[in-house]
Amino acid sequence: MIIGCEIAFWVFVLAGLVCRYILRLKTVGAALLLCTPIIDLILLVVTVIDLRNGADASITHGLAAVYIGASIGYGHSMIKWADVRFANRFAGGPPPQKKAKYGREHARNERLGWLRHLLSWAIGCAILYGMIWFVDEDGRTEGLLQLTRIWSMLLGLDFLYSFSFTLWPRRQK
Image (cartoon, rainbow, N blue to C red; front, side, top):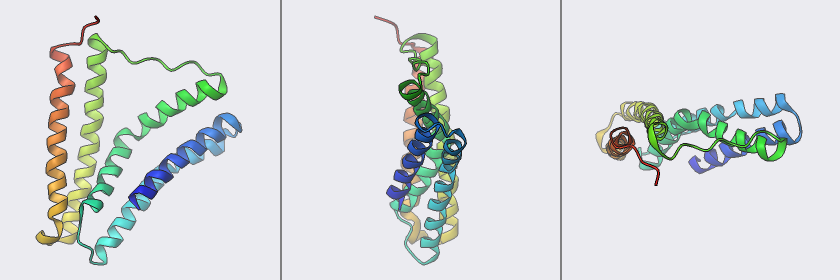
């Protein structure tokens, strides 16, 4: 189901962009793009139903929470990224601006990326802890707890990497 929701997310994004720029159906395109959060809601409902039916909370259930957190934290920027490139390619829009690779602007972009990661982590962990509370059996939720530990460690490593550019900006060669 997680893979299906991920595929559905990108199908709706692509369909929205095709309607917006190739078929010139801006309202339909916007509606399709606005449907992407509904996919996240469907994934959450299916996961809760599976847990309610007695399934052990596994890493797969946890990945649903990670996916939802990442969709909320990064979703808008991913759609914006695709929208600019699609507009350029199919509708004569301006070329996408290249991201700074050096200096303060690069460091700023890295910090903003980490803040998106933090938002994704906070939402995903809230959902994970909600699942743990919902199941309320330590033996059935160890995989979810382990996933929160791993994700927290990755968030910490991402912090060190992202903020290192603030202290030691990358210099142009």
